[in-house]
Length: 191
Image (cartoon, rainbow, N blue to C red; front, side):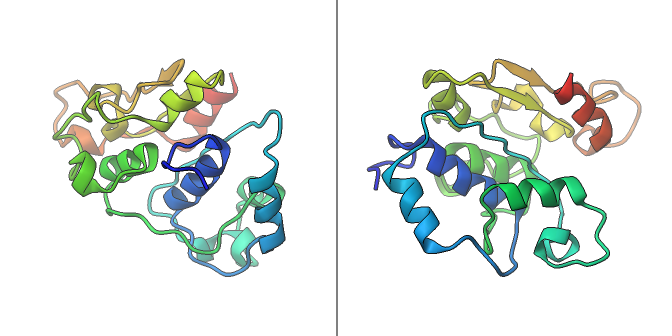
């Protein structure tokens, strides 16, 4: 195995990270021989898609057994990729959780413990920076103000679309609660 989290086989780390953010805790994973094969011979090119869903329960997704689920696109992605049966978030808040996800560090190391109150230091290496350095084109399409570029998670992305209307306006309420509907974010990403 690689010596560091971001070792020579970035794609393995990316697949593991994708599971963490989904917060999935159901049964049924790819067989162990599949993972052993992936570790021995990485593909020459690999597209990596990381989708994070806030407050989503695995037992409400079709791929994890919900018969009446209305998640056909997520189910299709999961069935055509690598799916994990257990994943855990290090902190139940969006920004600190994404900071762990993108850095491979625990909150005690990266020091992000709340939404909208701190900036991730530039000394913390991020997954997107590693992918970019490896020649990948990178993009992020953000739906929540707490992931705004001002907090430091934008490093390493060629595109970081984080427009959340009303986040800077004095319209009352907590700007950290501002978000964009998923359909609008997906439309931006597809464009």
